[in-house]
Length: 275
Image 1 (cartoon, rainbow, N blue to C red):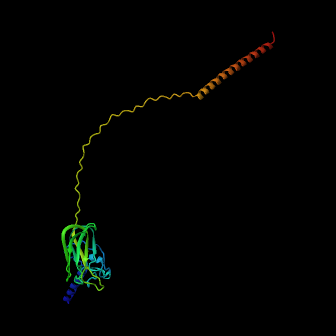
Image 2: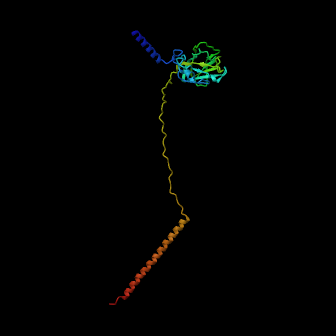
């Protein structure tokens, strides 16, 4: 009874440990896969979202179909393309790394027999200018062996598989196919560098010499001489004439008043009775 309980406990622990490890999480080599869960674009892709999709190329799944249905990426069999039609698969790593290794893992369910025959492995920093780091011609697989391409370290953010000849296996639809299970990318992060800082050199400062200031001289101002206009002269003469007339009239009136007073006195003296 104890042996049965111990065996059951062992099975439970094994199952729990297996469940904690994602299926197919193991990489082709013992390093961090920089392409895991990054963006993928393909010129031609069978997107049935069950077995095949361009996104499955970087999902980390590389196991038999009975363990996980994500087989990988495939040419759309209904596109019915010729064997030499170019097809590109491009991965965006989201940032630039110093890359040195790229791995293409064939689909396990068909023993890699639908790997493309001729293609180039390329890297790029900007997605426009490409450098070929591996070139493959006439590849034929009978087993799903990982294709590992190692090259001199070089900066890159984008990885492209440029297929120029597909597998010689013709699909039932009449189309030539190419299929991958996973694309893995390896390299190192670019270390952050800081520019050396230089101490600023102070230039000798010279006290500015003050120029002697000269008080501004203003020329003496004289009151403007206003020349009398004809109108002013006329006004003055009229005023003078008015004054003279007033004086004459006053004198006449004064004389008249004196004469009147004298006349009154004279009359009064005549009326006074004699003693």
